[in-house]
Structures are given as C-alpha cells and as structure tokens.
Image: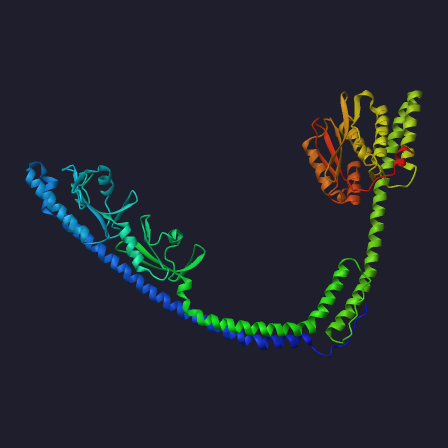
Length: 587
C-alpha cells in the first residue's frame, strides 16, 4: 500500500483545543467556585440554625413531661389515694366520697398543668373503680387497661407505654410490683397526641414539617397530615445519620435535622424544603444564568468555526465511510486543501482501493472452499449406498431369485439414474421424496416383512421447493442400519412433513430398540460440533450440508420418538421463490 508522507501545513486540532480551553475554562472555573462556596456557606448556616432550634424544642418538651412525671410520682404517696386503695372497706360513704373528690382534684391539677396531658387515671382495684381527671370522676374499672399499663418500665430510659395506639405514662404502686401480685393501684397519664401535633405545628414555619418518633416503641406524630410521606421517610432513616441529611419526600427534597431525647426516649425531626433552605442562593443562580448565556454565545461562535474547519470534511468522510459500509468500494473522495484532512482523504482513497482488491480475493477464495466442501460431502453418499446395494444383489443372485433380481435392478437403475443424470446440486422436494421411496423399496428386499415404511402425503405447495440432493435417503438409511437392523418383527419407519413459520420440518422416526440415553447423548454431541468428527456418518453428512447451505438455524435435531426409537427432524428454511420448474418433477 502506498503511504503519503506529506507534512501538514498547520495543526487544526491544537488550534481548536487551545481556543476552546482559553475561552471556557476561566468562566466555568469562576462559576463553579462561586456556586460551591455559596452553597457550602448557606448550608452550614441553615444546619446550625436548625440544630439550635430543634434542640430548644426538645428541651421544652422534656421540661413539660418531667414536670408531669414528678407530679405523678409525688401523688403515689397521697393520703386519699392510699385510703381508697387499702382502707376503702372501713370507710364510710362520706369519707369515701370526700377522698374520691380530693383525689380527682389532684388529678385534675396534673391535667391542667400541662397541655400535653389528655387524661389522668387512677386505677384502684380495691375500689373496683377508676378515678379520672375528666368530667366523669368515677368510671368502671378497666381490668384490661390496668394489666396492660402495669408492665414495669424504667422511666429513666423510656417513660412511655403504648396501648391500643394510645400513649401513656404509668406509675404502679408498689414499683416494681412484688412477685406476681398486681399493683395496689396504678396512676396513668394519657398523652394527648392532638396537643403534641399542635405543638409540633407551632414549632415549624416556611413549609417545614416536624415528626416526633419513639426510639424503642413504634409510635410517631407528624405535625401536618397533608404530608403523610414524611412520617414514613423519617421512620425508615438509619439511626445515627449525620445532621443535614437530605430526604426525598413526595418528589421533593427536604433537609432533615434530628435531635434525640435520652430522658423521653424520643427523637424530634424537622424537615425543611431545600427550596426554602437555600433561597439565598438566588443571586448565585443569576450569576449562573449570566455565565450560561455567555457560554452559549461562545459555543455558537465556536460551533460556526468548527463547522468551517472540521465539520464539513468530517461529514464528507462519514458519508464516504457509510457508502463503503454499504458495499460501495469504488468511491473516491476529492478534497482540495493540503492539511490533515487532505492526508486523511488520500489515505482513505488508498485504503478503499486496497480493500476492494482484498474483498474480491477473499470472497472468491471462500466461495471456492465452500463449494468444494459441499461437493465433497455430497459425493460421500454415493459409494456408501452403492456397495450396500451390491451386497443385496449378490445375495439374490446366489439364491437364483430371478424375479426379484429384475425388480431390484429396475429400482437400482432408477435410483442411480436419479443420482447421475445431471450435475444439479438442488432438486424439487417431490423428486427427493420419490427416490427416497425408491430407496425403501430397495431396502425391502433386504429386510422383507420385518420392517415397513410409511410416507405422509407431501403438501402440494411444497412439491416444487428446491432442496439439496440426497438429504432424506441418509436419514432413512440410518434408521435401517442403526435402529431396526436387529428388530425381527413389527419394525416401522415413518416419514412426515410439517410447516412452521418460515421453516419446513421433515421428520424420520423409527421404533428401533437400539437407542439408549448414552447413544442419544453421543449423537447430540456430534450434532453440536460436526466439523470435529473424524468419521462422516449419514446424519453428520446431511447436517453439515444443510448448515453450509442455509446457515446455523437449519440442520438436524435428534430426539427420542414416541415409538422409542430415534426421531430425526430436518429443519429447512422456506424461502419464497426457491421453487423448481414443474417439468423437473415429471421428467
């Protein structure tokens, strides 16, 4: 190949690269620095401010509940409660009524002292009643609630109990109960979820959302029911996550700040929309817009220059490559300038000329090799069948069976006339089936009544389809020689035809008893890699010939038939227009 060594006049590539870098790198560097610096500063300020706010809210909630817990613990030693719990049987009605009213007044004091308290209940088993801070001073004793709220808890780790989706703080007496005995009485404070929700709503502004969750118990309260995804997203967060973590809630990103309370065993999470958190970055966006507009102008200018310098020659070269890809190897590209593209186009033209020569040489060589292999495989069949036929003829001659010799030689003459009449590689399927029948007639002299052959009717539309010579007879021969040779009675061979989309299936099945799983597996291996087989059997011969002609989607498929013998299915593509002349069948 001739190589052009002319040096280019100038380096277009380096000019374009240096111009592009000199114009755009300073602008984008400034833009990147301004945005990163501004976002980091604002993020730190927002996170710091929200951390302080959340910590303040947690301290307020802790203070309120600590006051409630201390009041309840102080009332454990209340005289009226002790009397009603231990000496109610010896109290007069007036004394009992006075004690109940006094206890209700104290419970009401606990309720009114904190907005988070919904109800205060004193469960008194001895009285068989419960005293509450609500309007009904005395209610029926709820044994289920009493037992559920009597569970011993460590109020220094988690003061809450969850029962029927209601949140309680309970103080049994004695605490803890001794043995398996039930408490003498139980003071329980029911936490008001609506009040907590209202408090959380007051904690937030500017689209923020507050979520209060239990650490050990599975409960949570969200301030805004219009954002139900916030509660689920917070619960799914991994514990111990870093402050400032971002959550995607309802398709919008939120900045999340958490603060846990060890005293209450709760975590308060504040979710703030990033759009609100980083509103101060608006001025940076204006800078971004300005730089983007400048970049667009520069890119347009650069694109125009690029089009003149590079794009036009490249488009010409790409179109030329597309034509070569489509098979046009006679293309010649003209380029008037003496730069890098001039060298490239000259070498392209040289490459196409050399490629044209090589393609023709390779194609011709490949064609001759494939044709030689196909004819060699086809020629292997004739001698194999010939010496088997002469063995049969020899046997009948020794027996002086003149009538059958006449019939046999007639069949044999017809068969070899079919093989040798012309050099065509393909014949009609009707003719192939006709001489396959002739072959079975010949074999009937060998096997007699031991084996019968059955041919299904060939569909009329398939009679003139062209197929390679001698693809059906080797399959039948294989059934005689390897499947049925040792079968003394009731042997049969069935030949059938069926059509599938774009495919013709010719099947040959026998009911031989010689095929076991090992032999079937060996046949499968032979079909997978027929070219490596040192001995060319009839099955491999047909399989290779068909695949050489039609490709890997065609060929033989071997399996066990319903009769127990081998089922050989030959797949041939149905290509429109591949039909023999009608006269070929009847000549």
